[in-house]
Length: 309
Image (tube, rainbow, N blue to C red; front, side):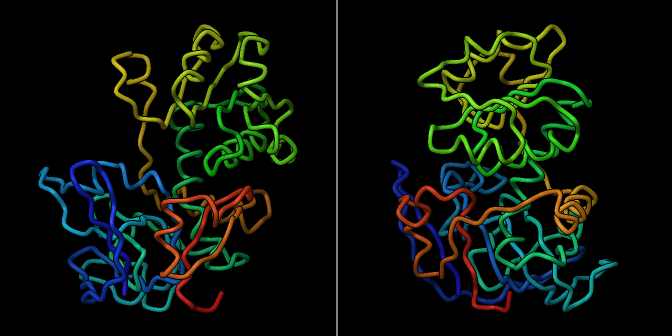
């Protein structure tokens, strides 16, 4: 059983609860029995959701590319993974996703699940936490004592950016809507700005790293705040011709070593995941198309498949 999504020429999506065959492992692949999968509404607008790697239209793809579950089977050449292991991670953007009872991934994209987390909490972690990790450390080269500005500090990625930057000894400023200021301060931000009220002009220049999860006008306002040699990181893909934005943009990738490090931090209590709501398959379409399920709660909406947590 799975959720599939079909789209027309104007990007209107139609969801369906569908029976499909259980996928089989190829060489170097593992089959996951999905216990939980997080929902990222913007995924419906991503190129891999609607097209194959060869550029052809996809027919009723299964969304959802971060999950937790147990290893159901392993393909030839796979080592270090055995059936029954509890894991969490990602799968390929062009593959059928995890809003289903089973999905296929590769060992390098998953890690052993944190022992202290439920399946739902673990499923909410991989894309957001890896994005924060790779943006701060691989792309932003963050060092202790540096100033970090997080655009969108209350979002799923921003929350991990703040937590990781705090652990790394950074001085953190962040933007957030008025109702989220306390939440963002509790994550570790020293100062929180409501951009539509304060703008960014009062922040002052001298930022070592700016991590953008918002884009648009806020990103444009942020560029002058970088010190000479400062690093801009953005995860917002726009049709901008600005070479600075093109150089600053990146897409997260699965990384078993990084995900294992994140799992240790979660188990030790240094990182906290946030789940806005847990839902079943029938409520997945509403989670993609509206806010009534999430409300004002932080974190991601997570599909749970009725397995133990």
